[in-house]
Length: 381
Ligand SMILES: CC(C)(COP(=O)(O)OP(=O)(O)OC[C@H]1O[C@@H](n2cnc3c(N)ncnc32)[C@H](O)[C@@H]1OP(=O)(O)O)[C@@H](O)C(=O)NCCC(=O)NCCS
Image (tube, rainbow, N blue to C red; front, side, top):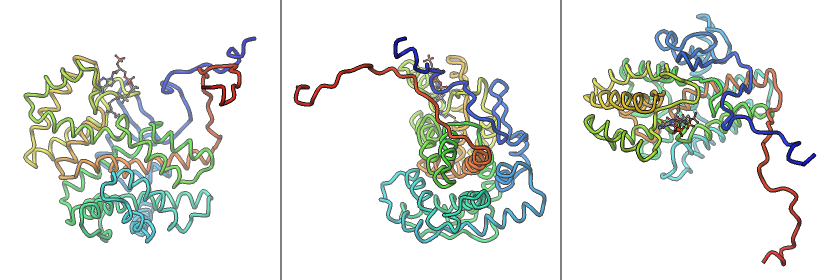
């Protein structure tokens, strides 16, 4: 038998359609455009829940009782401040550093100040997960303040995670509307089944790597423009298009040049991403209040053209971009903000992986040369 015949052959490129794990955290119904966390439709969670409550749901499997939510919220509040070493690492980052790289590095460093760093029990990993959910907003706001020559602000008592992030970013307690819009955005980003960054987190967790290592790897995976990085790319595109009357020709021209249009398409959804549906109305309200109604008009035109020309629909990043822009958030923070929400999903998946673990170690279809004969370096020319 020739050697090649014994080698495993390829499945679908990009693991499309491959079921790589069982999970009870989250499910994407691609044909219907529906998304559930622990059995709850995200539309219900976006309407009724808070990011803290949704994080509890993802980590623990059920919605909390009043007492459980109170305790969980208290744990979050107690963990929001960042430690001395993490602050030092953020301060050492060059001003030019991409905030996503600074976030990844600071999250990795935050294990040094974690009291459970050496404990890998389930209880300790859970506590570390809660601390990461609590600290990512503080880390990101600190990164932003320092790179813009402003004094970092400590988290303020009595504020939710969403309100605290906006407070630490802008130095002002946000309006109820801004807080709610940001809270809903965090809920909508909190999990998405086996997306690339969550899969990366689970691969790391399956080696029995810890929560900090898994989340650090996940942030690396989230950064690219085919994943979380698309939200910043969407806003750059909209700023380049400038006015609604240019939207159709801009898209047609880009498609004619075989360019990918950021904020469109999805590996699993065959219809509209339900998170885009939720964010569309919120983004247009916030943008209208900020005197920026033109984004909604421009985006509607782009959606129509993309549906007609390519059969593609908007995804989560298409409308989170204009929501954040209308809130006055700098472009380079959009992708790290995605991580502030997704961290609760990553942690839930890490805990789930640890609870019923097997090393994730697939095979490659080998397509390289075979049976080559060694030639000494002197004879290679
Ligand atoms: C999300 C994404 C990576 C999914 O990719 P995928 O499942 O691997 O699909 P492919 O990239 O193989 O695309 C399949 C086809 O649709 C086209 N397509 C997919 N997304 C497209 C987009 N945003 N703009 C233009 N064409 C797109 C591809 O060109 C390809 O066409 P072809 O078969 O004629 O070559 C892809 O849709 C994309 O790159 N979107 C833009 C980035 C983005 O918004 N990412 C955030 C996702 S939440």
